[in-house]
Image (tube, helix red, strand yellow):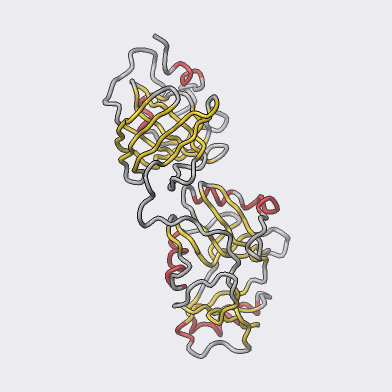
Length: 332
């Protein structure tokens, strides 16, 4: 009988990694109904799908996570079988070791097997985050694809196609009904919309359509920071210190994990943005203040050499590509 965990053990030193490394011997047996999905921040972010089968966890690395929509298939790379104990593993695999990085449990639960062959596996997942019918099918060698077989959740919406950003109108004075607004700095940077899905970033230019991701490679880690969350952010690339080191300030959220927010009022979009707690070494959520404080915010902008402020109506939807009076730019 071949050792199903031999490849797993050869790749790991139990003296150096906190991962479970069982000794050779008879495999434990369960009910072949446990699954786990682990979020693995290794050299590149991916998700590991593991299915209990014949005493081991049969495993696939899924770079973009499980597809939410039957119209989209995702790559799934077949990896070595893992021990059943791995179904509860979370921890930090040391740098330099195989799979070095942070491993956390994204979801776990029970699954049913509808079909299992060497080239095709049909399952039904019953987890708190992952549920539904999926099929894994081999395409070439260790490369497989994973396909969702049933419709997405009724509330799920696909990410929007590339959008042109909403623009403010310029006024000489702040709005009179200031309590109906929230105010932000006008940064004077380069407008950019960030599309993040499956831990990967696509950054689009100020017209909303040109892909500038390769020109701003430093921002790619924001994808890993957001993990499996699919979002579309509106913001600007700025150099606040004046030293040529850009950061990304985001001030609107247009899509959030299956929910299109364009029709939502700005107040709700802003609350959802702040709930994401976007804060990193070179990306952050732009500050905002009640509209009644626009005078003080305008003065602060002037002192910092910023071009002005933008007052945004709390009840206004997002109007892609429009110059809208719901956003008012007032210079310093």
